[in-house]
Image (cartoon, rainbow, N blue to C red; front, side, top):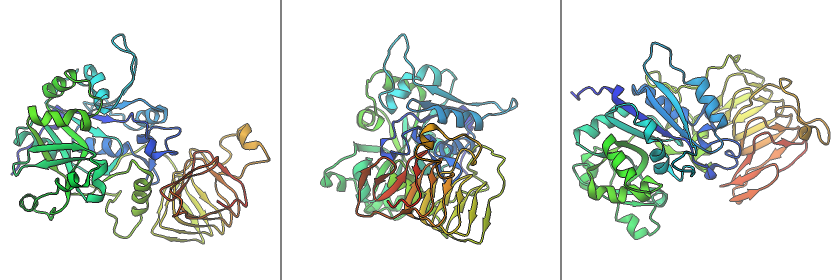
Length: 433
């Protein structure tokens, strides 16, 4: 039986300050971890929920770019009561007497906040990314870290050759020690040299033969080692600047995570991960009674669906759908889909308010009264992401654009063949995109 691990001695640091350029235009007005996901959640809810479910109650979230909505969500959601020892604390980038630079990367962000994150005595620090979809019991990772007597543990996930060029790759010994590390190699011969050998595949009880172990961006550090490495280096990134040297000077172990894991920091990955949630046998289930996914409590009414055909779709609370067909989609909170409309592979992020609860702006009133929030009558939309507070009129057609890789317009973008309607956009009646 595995020894018990007291997670009260663990401090979690969640990286939430990146620009999120791969998720534009969803990150035009918000940080990447604040982007909505699965109809009612935000991406930041994933590492926070994993931390809380793992028994970690001392959590720091490092923020920098467009952080207002992220701060608002965290403060409204993650408040422990007076009988619970712990906190979720936001550490925003700031200029100090010692330096006026902002965070230059993940490692630099952790370096700049060491005085805060290491103020409390801890046994290990857990560093987590803010743009991934997975469930993980960090207790297992910490136990592995201690059993292997590691200074640093990198959580790795097997990936196919086609994905390897955008990730940090590792070669691991049979005793789980990292012997070689390279960040985002572009040479296919180098990538192929990192394929998991047959003997290692068998050791993990899974068929990893031919796959490659890639970093998930989830790390465990012993406090002294983390401080020693960061203070003695100016590297801004863990993958490119820290680990290639660390494996020569420290004991770096690799914890293999074989369950579902997905980087959703790109439009294509974000879109596909959302659509998959509503399928018959999703790879990732939002519902897990033993490992819940937390988010902000909202006193919204149950959704109302009348005379409609819904297939393989998630419908969030407070939604109204009338006389419509919706297939392979995600409908976020408070959304309205009006009579005669058809949606295929559409991710709607929801609205912050119902029609009439907020006055129209001057820009919205130009050229006449804007359409109401949501989707108007007799509209057809396929393969699209509709951001918050969007107004789409009647008889609007938004078709899939598989041949268009990237396009940036005034009222819509196309990335990886997915049409994105930015936050607050207005699409007049009769428009065809």
